[in-house]
Image (tube, rainbow, N blue to C red; front, top):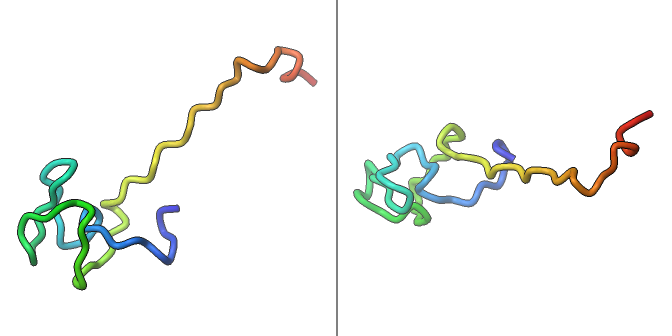
Length: 69
């Protein structure tokens, strides 16, 4: 859920942070920090957060008869 109320704080999706690579964020307040770190200045930016990909369904276990009416 992208817009849920209780978001765990992480610099990877903070307003003040800019992504350098997968593990490092350049924060305007603290400088270079780890992407999973956090501080008291955290402001959530929903556009920086990438939701997890959905799992691809495996339909090979079904027969053609299961999909007909």
